[in-house]
Amino acid sequence: MRQLSIPGAWVHEPEVLTDGRGSFHEWFRASDLDAAQGHPLGLAQANFSSSARGTLRGIHFADVPPGQAKYVKCVRGAVLDVIVDIRAGSPTYKRWEGVRLDDSGHRAVYLAEGLGHAFMALTDDACVLYLCSEGYAPAREHGIDPLDPELAIDWPLDVAPLLSGKDAAAPSLAEAEEQGLLPSYAECEAYYARLRTAGPPPAGLRAGSGPVLSGAGPGR
Image 1 (cartoon, rainbow, N blue to C red):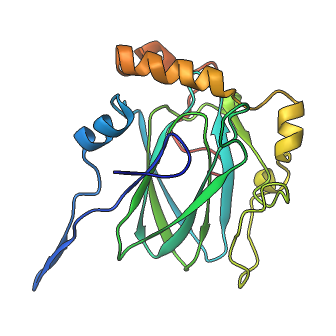
Image 2 (cartoon, rainbow, N blue to C red):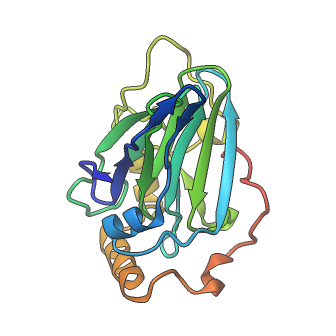
C-alpha cells in the first residue's frame, strides 16, 4: 500500500504473475490494509458498476460517523478514479488526487471515511468493484458537483461527461459547506482513532440512521 498525498487515501499496486495460462494477482489483502490504516476495513457491502465511456459518478460521501470507507478496483476497461478531501479543517482540504484504475495495471485505491469519491469511465463497459465499510443508507448519503470549478478536477476533455440527474444537481463544495453537509476533519480523526482502538464499528452502526437498501442505490 502506498499512501497518496491526501491523508487516509492509499493505492495498492500488486505484483502480477503471468504465464502461458494467463495472469494472477492479489487485489486485496486485509493485513496490508490493516497495517496501512491501523484498523480492519470491516466489510459490510460489495458493489459492482458497469459504465459507458464518459460516465462520471460522484462526488459521493456519507455522514461521519459512521461514513463509508471504500476499496475500489476496475476489473474491465479503465477509469480515472478521483479522491477529494472534503473534510472541513483538513490540512489538505479541497485537494484531489486522481489514479488510473484499469484491467492491465490492476491498481486499487482505498479512501477513508469522510473523503469524497468519484470516477470517470475512460472506456466503454468499464466495470468497477467497491468494497464498502458500511451499507448504503440514503439518509446519510450526499454529493458534490464533480464539475465544481473551485475543485477544478482535471477530467479528460476528449469525452463529454455523462452524469445522473442526481449528480448533475449536486451542490458545489462551497454550497455543501454552507449547508453543513461536510464532515469535519476533527470528527473524522476522532472516528479513525475510535476504529484503531476498538476495531470495526459495532454491528448496530452498520444499519445507519436511515434504511439500508440491498442494492447500491440510484446513481452509485
